[in-house]
Image (cartoon, rainbow, N blue to C red; front, side, top):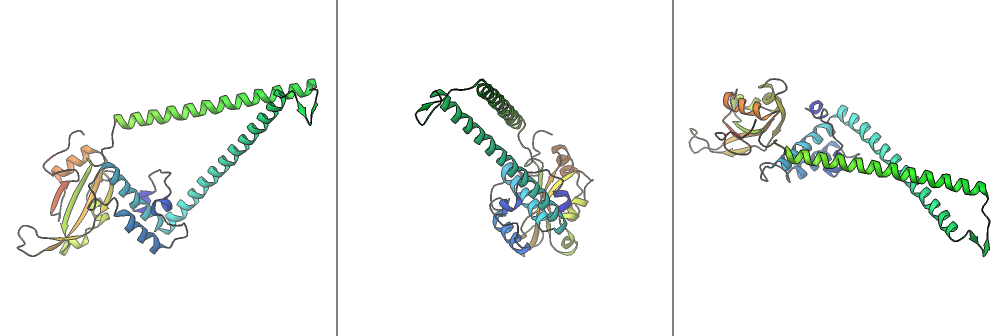
Length: 266
């Protein structure tokens, strides 16, 4: 579902996320994904909002970087972002150089304009130029301080909002399992999404298949497919857990607890 992944606005560098070069082959990208995803896989570590979000981000990176059209669009966007950052860095460098030059001139004036042991006389024109330069420097510093203050205020507001409304992605997540036999062999990410109304499902994460014994099958172990379905809201998640549809699904449980324990909120 690469097209769905691209709908999520992000400044994350997917190549850095997977620790691969932009020239990496599809096979190298997939190997890097498998290695990195183990650090956040719900079957390998205890699911938390942070690890689940990181695992979903890795899924998005894999989907985009292994789809030729989506990768081309992403590379163009990434290149433009890097170009803007380089231009900003160059502008900041020029500004720093200008400040340094002005400070050197100020130091010379404090010393009475002495050069090679000879005291120079400042003309009215030179003094006016210096005054204008100093005013421009002060305006630039005030503007920069204002921008820094505004950025800091936005960051603090965003942090306060996040703390007031913590992520509920783990509460919106449902883990389902199905027997990979017969019709169960047809169940995949797209099939799971198609069970629900358009817009209800935010993401589907397929986990590693496992062999287990299940009730009614004797001692024989069967291969079970597992997926975590992240719904758009907690209310939708509660509704589908209680109502379904769950055709060909062996078990349904909350990613954060037992299926009979409905999370608070909604």
